Length: 124
Image (cartoon, rainbow, N blue to C red; front, side, top):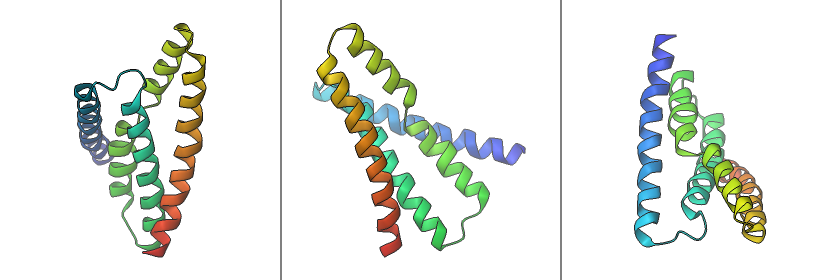
């Protein structure tokens, strides 16, 4: 059990740092009207999760490494809480059009990218 907790903690720290860097880069670029950094981490994470899931179906990867990657790195890289906060903020500001676009892009494109990643990994 301790090994699993260490794997999640170590992976989580990597994912959190990567997410912070993504947000930092977007903040420096001045793109603040739309939460592009949250969209980016969630869509990139969705694709990587799908791709690795398919890849790991073909090649044995230990449960500990899967835990490290999926729960640790990708679990902390992607961010549902920030997604929820962004939606709340847009609703509070009355920005319903962007709110709807944000929900659709994140969910429809994110799920599509998870499937695309999975099926792409089956080809390599």
